Figure 1 (cartoon, rainbow, N blue to C red):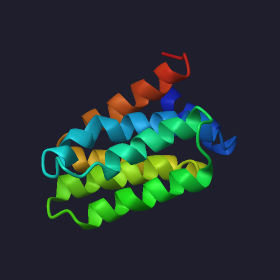
Figure 2 (cartoon, one colour):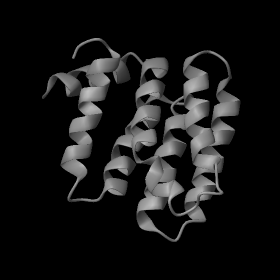
Figure 3 (cartoon, rainbow, N blue to C red):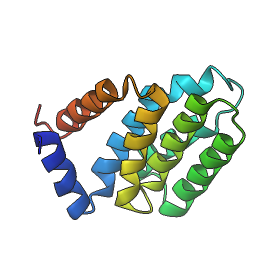
Length: 138
């Protein structure tokens, strides 16, 4: 396992929703342009990412973040483009991290999917670097 994998396991075991919500929001935001190119008028995924960050700062409660997550998933269902749909789902899972730390894995999976299988290794590498940076271990 890599240092990032070890850190992720530690954060998940400790149910560190705050750290995971920030990282999940970063992962989702990294692919958000894939959604916004196809649906520029739909701000539900962006609002979900903002909700994840607001939760991490202690500005909103779980219920508010959960509503934002559900809205981002509704935006995903409204998409006809696969990459845009996956990016919206990444945003939904970022906000849902407030509810359960395990949702932080959703943006990892959906961001890689949104970036495309050819680029998924590069996306995962970026995600790992970002997690280590956020925890001051890079």
